[in-house]
Length: 298
Image (cartoon, rainbow, N blue to C red; front, side):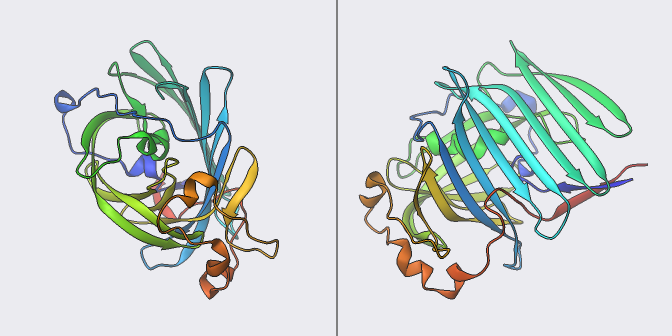
């Protein structure tokens, strides 16, 4: 049996490090998002071809937690791919993670429960179930929350940090601990379908080099992400349930939120909407991701 496994951000954080040199560092400086948030990205392969879209979302989970989701789809295929992490509202420490991939060749799912100093991971596939337990440092982040957690660091020129990452759900592989290093290397103006943005460039070392660009305003929205195989580019963003800005889709274009307008170089999306890049057909808002690696199952 053959299942396609997506080369997602979480799975791509593969580090060649020993467990002895992983630092349990609290990297959260300030949580920048509202209680409800949606951001949609187009995903390009290494040839620059669009292969899907991603929707990242934040929702409250009770009074003391957030639900952080990444939802992906392959346009024109039967594959869906979804990941969700419940994290503490104040510290973003993981509580549980779920990951599901489904397609014409079968389905696989993973659930991870963080209790005390351990995470228990259950992988379920059509041929059976596997359970693993892994020790977790006293401060660590689930890799499916990384694209959110990176927004919370101290964005200043030359800032560096290192933290413990737990790759709990990377079906069908067992969970592992990783050391991830971050460095804010400078500022850049980035053009994506949603507009032109002043950003901080963040370089990520997790066994392979990756880059991410976040707006310089207080929201620190992810504008672009390059994991070495795929590139995510922002299409639309909304906070607390209402569209704030994005590419034109025949329904008009709103301006950036007030905080974003204070960034020096954010242009309105109407200009971008007039370009051929912005007016090309974008797949479903709900989700989607990239083509990827596969594994064989006997």
